[in-house]
Amino acid sequence: MSNPEQELIQTYFAPLAGDGAAGLMDDAATWVPAEGMETVLSTDTLVAGVHFIGDEPADLIARKALRVNFSDLVAKGAAPCGYLLNLGLSTEQDHEWLKSFSYGLAEDQAEFGCKLLGGDTVSTPGPLVLSVTAIGEVPAGKVVRRGTAKVGDVLYVTGTIGDSAIGLEVLKERCKTVDDSYLIDRYRLPRPRIECLGLIREFASAAMDVSDGLIGDLEQLVAASGVGAKVNCDLVPFSEAVKSLSVLDDQVIIRALTGGDDYEILFSVPYKRADAFEAACSNEVHHIGEIVDGNQVAVCNTAGEQIEFPSKSWSHFS
Amino acid sequence: MSNPEQELIQTYFAPLAGDGAAGLMDDAATWVPAEGMETVLSTDTLVAGVHFIGDEPADLIARKALRVNFSDLVAKGAAPCGYLLNLGLSTEQDHEWLKSFSYGLAEDQAEFGCKLLGGDTVSTPGPLVLSVTAIGEVPAGKVVRRGTAKVGDVLYVTGTIGDSAIGLEVLKERCKTVDDSYLIDRYRLPRPRIECLGLIREFASAAMDVSDGLIGDLEQLVAASGVGAKVNCDLVPFSEAVKSLSVLDDQVIIRALTGGDDYEILFSVPYKRADAFEAACSNEVHHIGEIVDGNQVAVCNTAGEQIEFPSKSWSHFS
Picture 1 (cartoon, rainbow over the protein chains, first blue to last red):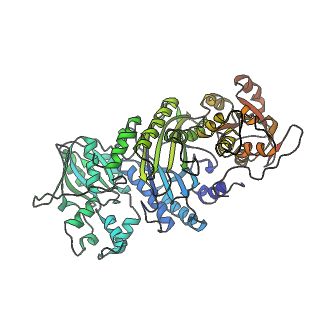
Picture 2: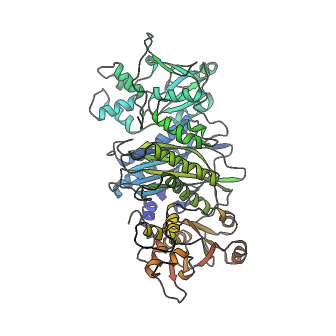
Picture 3: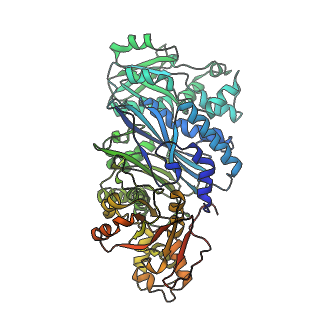
């Protein structure tokens, strides 16, 4: 075991390995879903300075990388089971960092019932970069897609929207709220809505997680479905901390609705099933609008005034 | 479709998407192996300036990223079927680059019978970085591991060793051979030994691809198997181009045996099956040694002189 790359893998990552990973001493993993289940794969890349600030505790970076992927899986009705990890380490990540990073992975493996199946660890002259490929399972043929919303379906979102975007503003000391630490925590640590998995599987006609901003993501959902949508922004759920902003004007609402990093689930339910759905779900789910004819997303308030958005989501390539 | 990231994906990558990818308009892919087959997953990250020079034609970078993963799958007895692509683009990659890159992916999809199933495209202030996660299938329960070589097994390697490492020396104008372009091509474009898949599945007791250097990789194989190995370096196959080096001394042999990027398959066959194996295989496979008791790799020449290696493989973290 003279190879330093292998030593690093065996020290920090082999203890996290699950069945099929061959103790991370092989070039590939095997994966077999449970009987009657189908494999769902999701992958996201995070770059220091782009997707996170870079000076966060390493365990939080690890957990965020896992959770943004688990959030994708849950929105597809899939339960997270395992993951692959591609780690591009800069000279700034030392053994202390790796110890904390692998601790974060272990914490979330326990919380989400997942195991590490494989990966690749390399050095880079650029910033820290990491990709997680999450492996989940869904009852065969029952994956919930983005492109299957129908006119008349009712639109819902889980949790509260904008906490993370406003949390980043708080971190940058651009504003203050009654609960700054709650918002910063929401920015730093996504909470995949694993508790909604059963509801999504049973009721959702289409779903996606809100990662790039509610309105921009809804535009993706309606584009994939070939429909339009109407949202009442007065129905969009805001946390007490966001509501406490001294000026809750259109600019704040726009920031909340387009800022991204929410990791809530946006989904549609057929109109005829909406009553049954609302009876089955907790008050953590909010009705925000409807799927309509057309190909646009229209956002109004209860008074019927239309809200205009200069940019509807965050993009790498604007 | 106002989101530039989505436009980029739809322009360059959606035409490459296979079943289960939902046209790359969703957050996740579904994957179902053929009846009786099991899923095998392999992932590798490539960083410009580390894993390739960076000024290569973009189509070659794409093909190399796929092939280093397909090589891993083939060494496990798995046929490549699909892949996920994580692309971290620097400011240097423009539309021309993406056009060439996606052309390279399309070429290799056709050559290897694979489809793109999903991925993530982000921007990075660092160098171009890309990860491919290759999805393959193997008859259920029949994956060929690294850690299953037994004392007495015969060691083989496909093709020729050292072409790529010497090719890089040629590129850096440190040496000349009778066929420089052959060696440079071997460095730039790995050739996964897909034609050996049937033989690996039928005969190999353990296998891995040679990516970090023959001797260092063999050390990984014996460490995983809890055995030792003896290699006769006079039996290691060299190409005519490598043999043509004006001084084929120990230094060149050491470079060839430890340089890496060969993407040949190193494997063991039970002694009792070696005759049947050799009868079944072409002369592209070479007997180079034996699995023995112990935990060391000993390299000798036919005269019995031991060869010492200052470093046995390439490492990111020496």
